[in-house]
Amino acid sequence: MRIIAGTLRGRGLHGPEPGDRSIRPTSDMAREALFSILQRWPSGAFLDLFAGTGAVAMEAWSRGYEPVVCVEKAPAALKLVEANARGTGVRVVKRDAARLRPGAFPGQAVVFVDPPYDLSPALWPALAPGFAECLLPGGILVWETDRRVDLPAVPGLAFQESRTYGAARFHFFQR
Image (tube, rainbow, N blue to C red):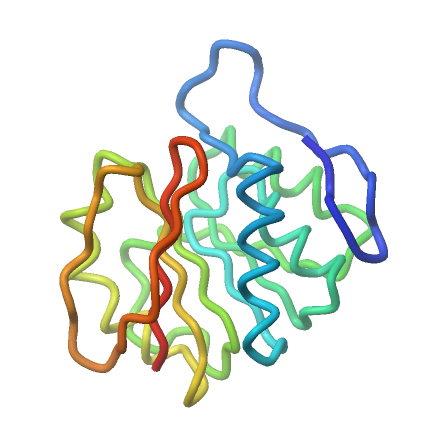
């Protein structure tokens, strides 16, 4: 894993041990596509929830999003995201993203959410409205799921599009 573009382009990232399936980093190809799509909207504050290795947040920071915050609770993932964030301006917060109060991190241009794929369909209706409250007007909520998952509409968010890259599917919603 590496950072694709920006000021940290080419920097290697720490990933899970071989065979560790508890952490599923967003692939380089999917991250590159994600940030190509995000160019349509203004950059600014970036919130990475269920951050895992923090690869998406590091890519955001490298590409000029600021401030960038990662939220992660799993001890193994927390070690990786902290190691990857060293020497950057990315802030790491040890919390359970599924238990954040609505609007916990206000003023975000982008909120990226990548929960465990098996939990994602159940978490979507419960958490998306609260995460939407973190967004600035016109801000983008990106929810990563398994490629086979469709997400229903929720109040306060307008569906923009979905894109599939390998096993991952990104769903884009605007506030």
